[in-house]
Length: 571
Image (tube, rainbow, N blue to C red; front, side):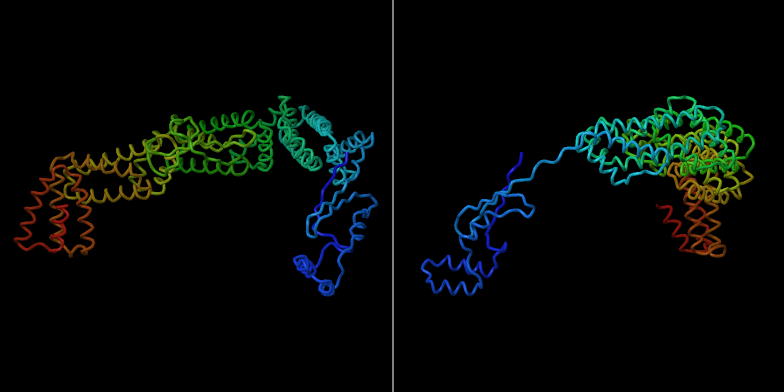
């Protein structure tokens, strides 16, 4: 049924659609004058250069015909000049119907194009023509039929491709290359097919959430036939694991092939279920055996260097063909308890769980893929570090500190901080070493002459390790203080007496042995040792006695140094 449209017309004139502004102004002036004379009216007409439209002109306009020959019913309501007028136009006829064989012929044309794409042949029709055919079918309510036929063609082709892999004659490298070529070809074909059926995807599919998109339909069909035969899936996973193991043993492998195959498993939602658990199990077995063997064969610095090398290799492996993408979101602390939970620490320093900020690694794509980064690195750290914490420390930590191996101690700290209780264990070993070493300095009477200087040197050495190797970790700073306070009081009163005599000798020498700045720094270091001593009254007694002697006999080398020392003691 035709409809009627109304067009509003402000003013009509013969042979033109508008009236000049000059003429409108003239008409307005003439209409506002009720008693205008004929002479004045003629004068106004002469100014406009035109004559007012006649009644006949309006009558002729009401019977105009369209340029295409279709008659239009036009009605102009009579009213005062300037009033709104209505123009009524009837629409054209309904759209013509499609030919009876249009559906059959169009479906066959589209099927032929899809088969050509799947067989890597040239398409006889232009892409624009095929796209228009899809659009026409969708607009004439043939979308369900079109989607069903397309799904059938894709399924038939995927099944045919998968059947070729059921043969057991291919070796693993050849099998992996062929399955990868099949996957790449499938993706390229689906991209081309989707470009032709894009209108179907953006109308019918979007309006029906239960119906998968063309791309997802292709992935689901590929996944279904890929995993329907356990031989194909098993050979693919075993082949990937074989290549990774070869690379871990130093052999060169095709990383591009590995990356493509692993992306395939991710896209068809088989990465977690079919690959990741087996991959992590193989990783755990490899590094468990390697850790036990190398702990017996290598010394501590060599073992630490090997662990660092392995971690770098696994991170590089993640970057090249395993997925390193991370999307870290906050996780409430009450959801975190055990080491087995997938958590990462978000703080540079600290021990245990106290005061640390945790986050849960929740890396997932829209198809449910979870990143391998955390479980892979965690497995390596656990087998090469966590399982050997005590062995590493007992075998070589004291030697590293004794020889002042700053670079090795720095690496040791960076590795131990990666695992649970690593820094706690390291801090305990550091504390034990200081107590043992310091006690040998204090207890031995034969070292009394050099005790204070040795304590100062030992304190400088430990401070340097905490600062440069242990990143000035507060727990290690406190452990250092506690250890010094412990061993320096193992020999009652003697350290206090010797420190007082050491100060006396330095103040007597004054600028003869060092500059004022060097003497001031030395006095500051001595005051650090003084604070560790419990018998401060003993030190005070010896210091006052020595001070009196220096002042009486005039042996003090610097009055400023004496004042500085007294000021430090008061503080």
